[in-house]
Image 1 (spheres, rainbow, N blue to C red):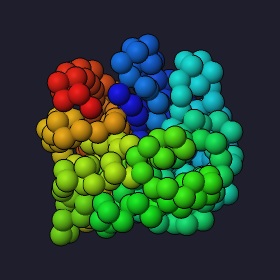
Image 2: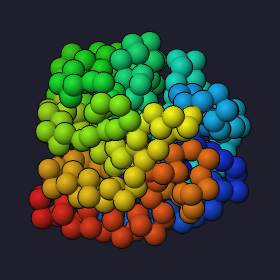
Image 3: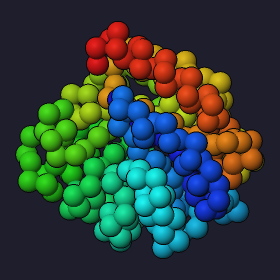
Length: 266
């Protein structure tokens, strides 16, 4: 099972290493294909005053240190094309944010690297239309076929993170997991799927109590992996705290998901 886990954004080198140390069990467990996730910059914050991160150069330095010290594979977000080749020197997986999932230049730039590309489905996108985002990366890599097998071979993933449901809410249509899995292996982002944007406070809200329920449902439907943002104290997190899991919650939930996955035979 693919597992992407870590804090939303790099808050400090000390906090990153505290969380990274707590996630060692997943790296050492052969049942997981583990990637440590954190962002050097969150460019799509609601408010100008919201914390964004340390920036490209300092953020990648910290992620490289995590990689060197723990031996982890790394995944991070890229928001602009110029960031892609620089980030690709450090990380093993490039993540395309949901709001940018149709940005051709960004997808082509990611496709020109030899890194895995994880494309998050926009909250505004139909699952069927995500095949065209996959195709942009695959064609850049010399592949004209859009299929699960082709995407798996050429290192392209799709990620479900919920769909806009009116104002200030997201819902997950579990059919999208089945539909998108025709085009690429699918990761279910359980923590962002419980976000509640547009609270009027300049920050995105969320309900992390719903994360285990949605994750179990996705495992039952059938996915290739999961993405969880996690923190030692989500209440104090500088970004996305309301939808994050505590580290100890992730341990319990991941074991449950493995059990469901083994029964389902995904």
